[in-house]
Image (cartoon, rainbow, N blue to C red; front, top):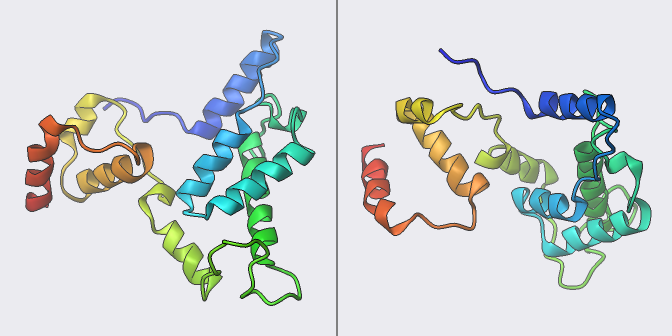
Length: 181
């Protein structure tokens, strides 16, 4: 059996060490693109993403904190950006303030969920937030069966390629898989 693919956190630390060894200063991560990715995965309103981008522009543009060379097992640019998105969510919905939480701070912002705990649980149960060990090769992918296959298909459909539809030539196969599972 082939070894499992390395974890992204391990690859990030290894890339930072390699850059340091070679005396290369890598570019900062694409913060606005990553903030958009995180906001979409969490199904947050566009306004929350826009506030997060504004916070990024105010406080973190060209910051060395967003460079992969500032990567440790306990912190990375990705952690900092997710924290920034959480702060934008707090600002938009006045979380942690004495203001009424039913009144969003921006016009056109949808009302907050009735329970933030229920909202968080729903997001964590979505395929995008589940820990997934994807197949390391096409051979492993062909061997997936049952629930593992359905979980992988749900992950690719909703997380990896959310804006792409099934190619026309695979539509029949997709329908057959849905009926069998």
